[in-house]
Figure 1 (cartoon, one colour):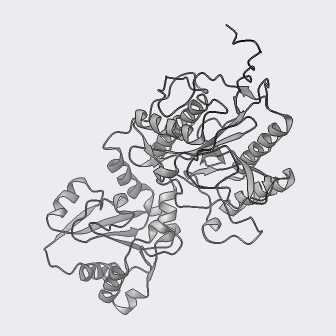
Figure 2 (tube, one colour):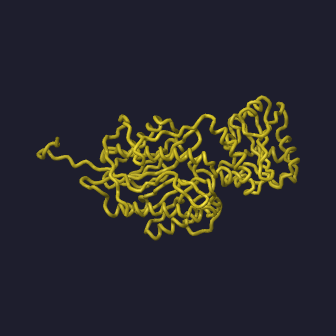
Figure 3 (cartoon, helix red, strand yellow):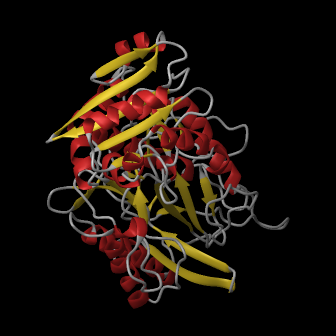
Length: 460
């Protein structure tokens, strides 16, 4: 059993407290946010199109991919192809040619000039105002003679569902009956493409993960049992995010999610006061460079007055959750399905005596906290793999995943969970944590009880 490491506490957290620099528990020094230059994303997305999209289209068995971008209600993937500043409707088209992809944008004149300057496309064709864009798209597709044409309509992958009903109707009207029969959902190509990250992106995520973990440990150092509330911990992290120049990885009202009582799932921090005997779970993520996000949990345990280590039962729960994380990591390797990783951890949970948990073991992370790609889920009821959980794990994919141990705490709807969430990148031979995983609980001592009127005064 791993020895729990005490953490010294020095300050009461309140809504008015100020942060004092605290050393990183891992490195002994503060960790700066990743220095992502302003031109990083335009350069990286162009490299992604050139290096990763051909493989993704081949795996998805897609010969052409069409995205339609427009102002005010743009496609979710617009800024992955250079269409984030679309005014009039523009078409972004990708044609697979052997082991390469040829990219083409059909854009209204004016916007086309700017797109040519900053966009990642091989060719930008300006169209005079009033030109029938859909007829132009249809003509390009007819000339390319693709066997399968991907469009952004999907009921399984939300970011691959950007084509509106009116856009789809106009596109189908412009296509010949033969081409209409070749339309397929882009969910496969989108999942295969976006789930794999370039080495430079993995490095950005690695540095962001280190900062995420450091800030969570800093927050725990401020806790005074019996006074600090979950929401105080969350507010401290919000201030540190602002000071560090990073943004929220997901909905701001639910980031961070600090829970010292029964699990509340994905939710906001509450007014609950942290007490001795509590496990504290902080689910937290940051966004760096306006693009890349993290999703990491760190756990603390609140010692009772006079305790120097948690009770045996608490340490056993922690170690079982930690073993679940290691079990999932061992199963996370190229060629495995997301379902296989979930199954490996759930088998361990049953062996360890954990209550069932409704949430999957993990998910891709990178551009969104819940990114696209293989879902590490689906094995809770021993049903066959399907949907995202049936997707194959590949090198370069980054995941956030939990090691679970759950137990009832006062009623069927009052469950507590140790969910040791880490981030890992898949390599050619397996997977590795992005940063050193949490080995020991952060221990929070409780102050000794105050003496009564007749007792001794405070020691000097």
